[in-house]
Length: 378
Image (cartoon, rainbow, N blue to C red):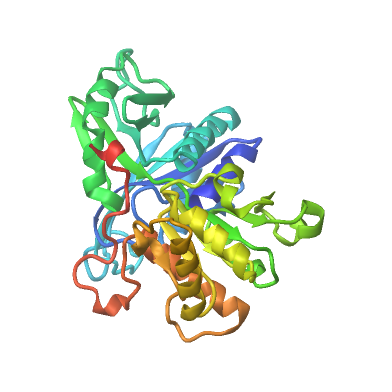
């Protein structure tokens, strides 16, 4: 997700032509799944990655030709052979990867940035459809035409021709959810469309603004999450400058937390104000919401006291499995930075529907299905 954020920023801010490299299809193993992107400027400098550094320099060379001709193209890397003889790159990743290189002027780059931003800032997962092959006819779409599909809503940029391929593709877009990071590619006559699932960015709400919140905010922001710090004090006392790139909001009454911030199913909330009464009310408000994760800092006995008080006030605790207390994954760390890392790891695991165990013990693909909205996927 951090890649999505950096790409959106780079495309929004450019005032010169760029080439956008996007992984549109993966067969087998790869470092980055479908939707991994890299912006390549005319001077050869780049933002973002599409692999672990294996393909970037070669893609930059292909981008020179795309810059020169102004014509999009798909580059295929087949790394399933041990020696990668066809490419001489010695990757050994055991996968086949298709990467679309599309030339964008400043205006087009801004339009693509807006479309991606709409996808990651929404409340439900969406599908981004991209034309990766098409004949040069008046009725056919242009390579690089994009459409963001959210249920029945379709937002398009670029030339979709007579839109017949778009209409066919939109009816099958939901199939992309089953493919996850591998992506889905479909042919409609002589038009080929790649489909990519775009998941909402994780919204991390932190109730408290003590010194131990600082590293938690930093880790969340570095991952491209939407981070909000909630404080009961006026903003000038909460020192929002300590939390660059995060939102800082006032909430004088913790029970009205839902009026101060959005508490959706893509929200993870952490309670760490270090005040028992206030943490109890924050937890009460969160348990009554639809947030996917509620983490409470502190020992187990403290949280049990909080829950007992909530129950004594007549509130039924439903979906209690969303509550994680003591908070964090057991990674053997201590101190504010270590605790923050443990919390971030747990939030990532829970919202990614993973156990948080060792990858060496995982059976099956390392990158399984991402969490998606049922209303979008059906």
